[in-house]
Length: 98
Image (cartoon, rainbow, N blue to C red; front, side):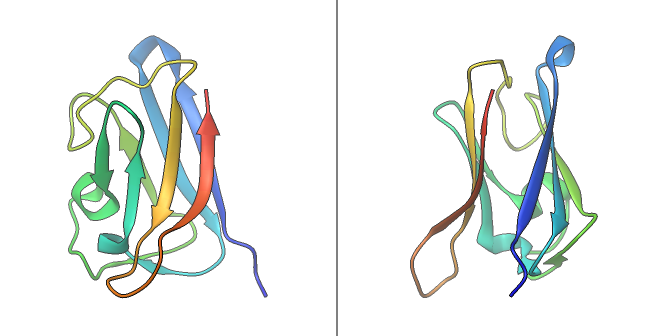
């Protein structure tokens, strides 16, 4: 079984977080949510893709005030990448603790 891996790159001067699916299972973009106490957005909203577009290794989105996430990302923030299928329980795939 392959372990899913999500990586994060914080660009502090811009208050931006780049999120990359590095390896593991593909997910429908509408079933992945990136959330914190300040903002929340589905992968497809951030990527400008359809809800059923597959998200797989190499796919990247950006969290910022200038897109669907709608908030700055700062050191000390906690961002969770959550898989939430239409029928089933939510699973936190990865967490970034700035």
